[in-house]
Image (tube, rainbow, N blue to C red; front, side, top):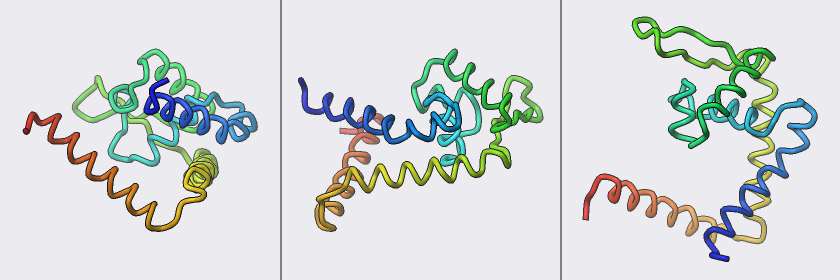
Length: 144
């Protein structure tokens, strides 16, 4: 198997395994937790279409899970003045403890992922990611 593909696959399986106890406790699907954490961790994204575009999730999957999060009181919908086609998705007070716990899971996962690396390796890894991100921006912009 392609090492890059294998890593990304293992990453998602590992992340989902780390989240599983919280999802089971809350009786939330992984996708619903992901959506909630995405919205709260990235406040510049506020709509279902943002989730579809940025997270590359299917619109019907986002719709079903957003509906569930609204029904269960984790999100509320808010109309956008002047654009009746857009609806903002806002985390509620009920979501606060779930988000805190979700962030703890994410932080533990990242720390576990970086186990057995020293500060120099971590610094080099994150510097390489930053360089690759800039290279991707240039590719997207059509720069040579």
